Amino acid sequence: MSFPLLRPILLADSITRVGGEAKGAVVVNASHGGVYAAFCAARLAVAAAIFNDAGVGRGKAGISGLDYLEALGVPAAAVSHQSARIGEGADMMARGILSYRNELAGSLGCRAGMSCREAAEALRRAEEKGLEPPPEHEAQFLILADPPAVWALDSASLVGPQHKGAILVTGSHGGLLGGKPETALKYDALAALFNDAGIGIDEAGTRRIFALDGRGIAAATVAAESARIGESRSTYEEGILSRVNATAASLGIEPGISARDFVALIRQKSAPKGDSR
Image (cartoon, rainbow, N blue to C red; front, top):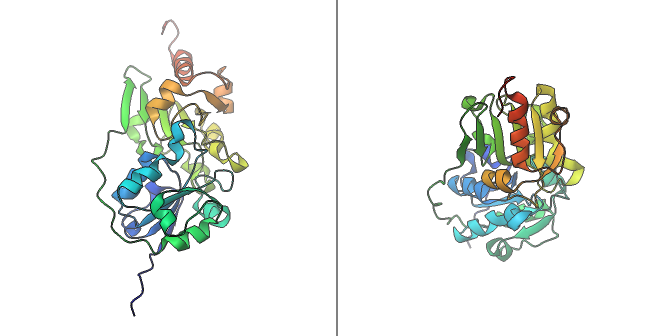
């Protein structure tokens, strides 16, 4: 009598922080469940994945990756942002409660209300039959070139040395990976915007911006209901600020203004005297 192969379970603070070890595994990761994160999971050839629902948000962007993975034959689910901290895989495994799943995950026994740990065990029976994801879509865009430059990045994982001193408009959640302040931003920018992922338990979706105060970086989150998480251009074009850090507040920036106004104010405050920008 043969028994199905049980997939290993891999725990991660972000889908962008794992590599070849994810192939054929059930990846319990604390990224949002949007399309960009799902693309990363598919590219890694995971057998199944569990994300954070990131408050679901505008256009259900926080769980849109579940349908994306369904189309590729990959079972996927998400835990409630009110049950576990986004950006912290260990907290998801310890406290996470399933809020959404795709049909493939449902066929393996996943259901809303079950624990993340139970769901991960159920997904270990997933078959490794996922299809290749479509070609990677462009995920970073130069909005304004004259200094300080303004970049739109679908994921903060794309921040590189070329973005030092720029204004970064990201589609990433505002949580800290593993709760570690040093993960807030890889390089020092002039200012940065994130999605608050529904804010969530322990206000986890906003912690990144307050860690950036220690580096003198003005930062804010936009409300998940105002902009699609994982889509930086939605952050810029539609986002409404929900939280600001002390550095941003000292520049006169307040919750309730648009992301566009945030960018304009930062550029105005950083302009040399006599520049009418």
